[in-house]
Image (tube, rainbow, N blue to C red; front, side, top):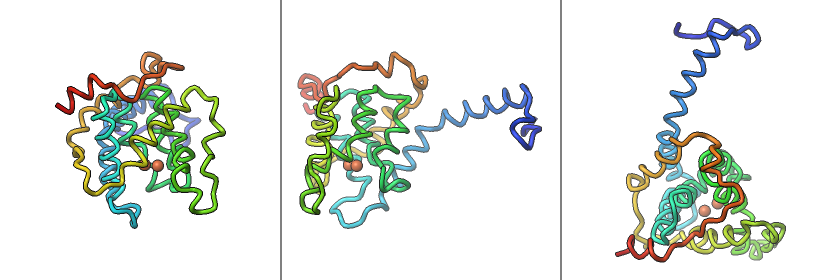
Length: 206
Ligand SMILES: [Fe+2]
Ligand SMILES: [Fe+2]
């Protein structure tokens, strides 16, 4: 069997769908590889800044790493702008959708909302509302998103910052996307893990 027998989904049988499931599992196992490739494509996006979106992504992830952040945070920082290419008006939601099955709920929420939180730094220059984030003031992860933006996102447009390269982060991305999707032990709903850990940061920056 090289393809399914059906031409309309409603005509498929168990053999067809079991066959497709095996293909899907195989395809899904290469998600990390495809995401790393998409990250390289970010090198072409968003002119006007002093660094490319790839450079910004690597810089954000490097800052997270050097802050002692855990794997979920570092990978979330690395991929937080991956929606820029295909979803310029909701790139935050796009990135969050990719991360959601594989990282802590806290990190996916922060990535999903970071666009609104980032407005704090520029919206007033354009007649917009810099306090859009106030809509989430009472949310459990409000402070985490504020910290994410302050420490790792808005600060990461510096062409002189020495960041790690994609190869450095590859094992972390592979680890995250090899997890079982929506595993409660990964999602850890309602749990807050600090973005910074001074002890681990000390070891990593030694
Ligand atoms: Fe962003
Ligand atoms: Fe960003």
